[in-house]
Image 1 (tube, rainbow, N blue to C red):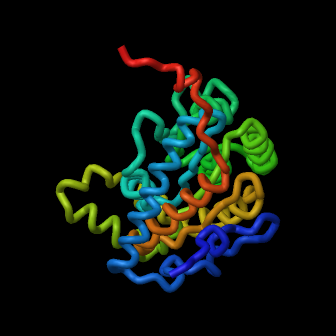
Image 2 (cartoon, rainbow, N blue to C red):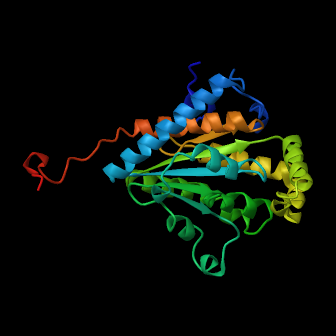
Length: 271
């Protein structure tokens, strides 16, 4: 089955986003089974080979941003999709509540500090977008402050793009009922209860507020140089399939080349 995941799931730049129009159960005609597993395996293999080329070329970097509500599957996506990557060239940064040091800088400081170096893939588990999501929903900063940040973030991402850091952003879209099911599974599994916190449940009260905040972030900050993809994530297998294909397509579009050898290999002589 030929599916252009990048085209089907992109949040069109300049267009408003209504998450109610995006079905978190959507699979674009795919079904769980051998064909899906084969396609997922091939895209993971492509990512592995392209990561090696990215590292060898050492002229640019790839930044993957993962956002989503609690239990949307950010950790699972990293674990399943990036499984073939060489950990030496793939780094994950989780953005939680700012530390004392981070709070003493402007809000972009900690994000810029974690941008991958040339040759590497960087993965942000949450990101700078927390500064137009959490801070907005909980009134941590006034509207006149957070409302300016969309343009600032776009300018920051354009700066990275202009300096050869390719950005691809995924919003893992789950329903409220699916989140409840996943929370319950964590409660029922003794090995997973550590992942549950009171804040997980408290944040559900703000579901509609977060929906509005995400819709604005997706609409205002999906750009040609740093697109947002809205990934239907109720079905974990489809989430992994879609994200893996889009990452592979993004790397291939970078048109990387192996560098020439630093020596004349014809002149090498065995001793």
